[in-house]
Image (cartoon, rainbow, N blue to C red; front, side, top):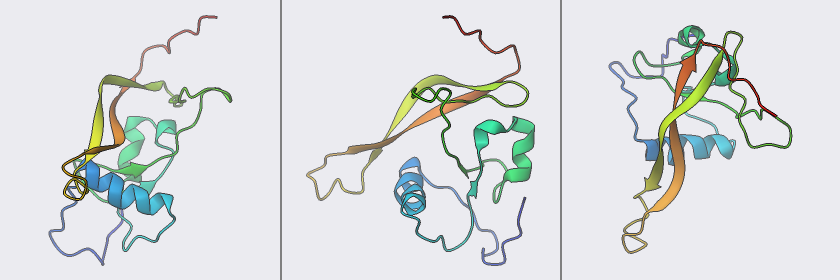
Length: 132
């Protein structure tokens, strides 16, 4: 799925902060606003094994960005379904809270939580058993 972007200038780099990703790209996606150029692929990332992801990348070599819906493991649960055909993705480490500083000048220096960032690790071992 790697694309050649004739609209992207030579030596173009895509290195945004977490705040910029949320406020500019995710908010555009949620409001169904058009993007000037396609930079972030829209895939169900949890359904793919890590070795399948390079073929899904639109732009980037070492750092990749994807839009992905979050499937539920059970209909009446907030627990996400991260199982792939081989094993599963697991959230690990501490959750990083993403705050905005763009409105800080207008709000007397106050920062607002606008999202969270989680690290995911792919596990090839057996999936954890479900205990009832």
